[in-house]
Length: 212
Image (tube, rainbow, N blue to C red):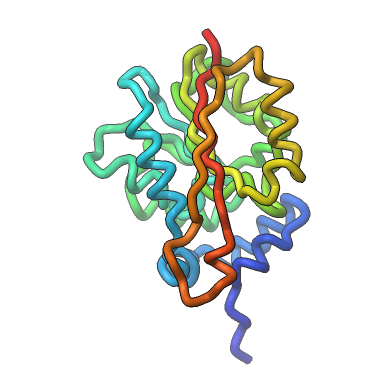
């Protein structure tokens, strides 16, 4: 029997970390071709370019949250000079990221719980595709702030449909004394596509720094 091809709706339907582990275990080997390439997925490219625009040399090491198969890490480390740590809940996705040879280290962990990194040890946090339907909510911001150095840069993609409904807007208000005034830049998650479903996905890039 031919197994049904995994689609965007399957990812958006996730409800628990366990659901994520199961889905991405099946999807890992074909994610880049079946989803990223087929849907003209733009978020990794956009987040990487925002990082390059707003980052300083001191924003290191970089933590790629929800690193998946390494799409962001690959773009950030084109010249092989950056220290990037990838963190993801799926060991199978990280196995694919490892093949790209763009990470200094990889961590299998659930970022909605305590992250196994020291206080003030990370220079920048990037993320594409993790803060979205059925994945990770704004509760993860507290741990990410804990492990980030004072002055550290954040460049996060947040699906526009969960920005208010998922509590992200409210979270930004709660942590306003801990971060710089955020820049919000909206873009399409996918290049113009024949499937209307993809054209509807809008992303809010959220760019800010942890206060010193």
